[in-house]
Length: 308
Image 1 (cartoon, rainbow, N blue to C red):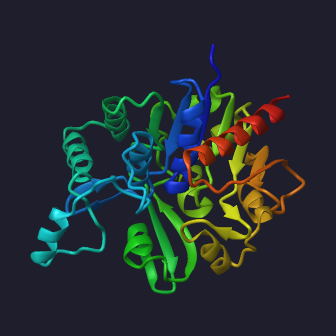
Image 2: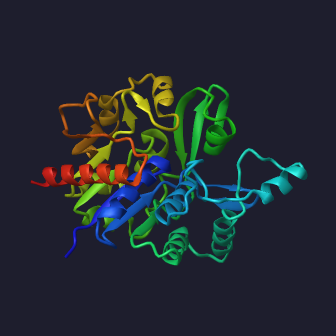
Image 3: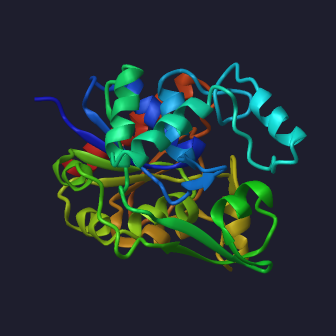
């Protein structure tokens, strides 16, 4: 029987690690549990940014230049929208609309998000399991010096400019993990935490009580990949947010944030690392498919070491 692996993921960096694992592991041995705290409705359409980024990445459809959306995208819808005076701070490409429209139709018909995502993955012949963290509504809100902002208002419209004071996840306490999530964590040979922003992309998953409890009780080693490279984040506001929260931008802080959930941490090359965890070092900058595979091999090797 093939070993089973699970990844907690969100954002572009997380999608890259999942892609690396998907490339080197046997088909149907990998489960990705994806942040949905970023999900919101825009022009009446349900948008799931982290799920869609992962689907596009795994299907070879992601826009390499932008880092989000579809390759070869066109923008006729946005141009028409703008001509009518519509808001244009969040771009929806013409091809991208297909996912949002179909997701909206299915949700209106009563289908859960987990079932919809499974159908999308099957349509694109993806040989892994992609699960939303929950089928319930959970929303990330950011407390800032400009007031309380919905996540996409902070992240996209304001380009992470406001100073962050705290992050909250509305609905998480009452949310139930999506079908298959707890089993994936409990039955895995290893669980990985992707190099996603810990506060914005991973914490929404950890805020769901049953997911945190599963991570605390699983016998599988839990291995994280640090999102920091030489004290900086490759993409996104991780380092800025850490500074604003009064935290040192170090791997020690990343390890302390996850606390006793972790058994190991993969860090970039010669970066400092805490002595309290098993540590693996590799170049964690993932620009190419080969880079993604290298980091994937590092997390698998560290998980094997932790299982001894």
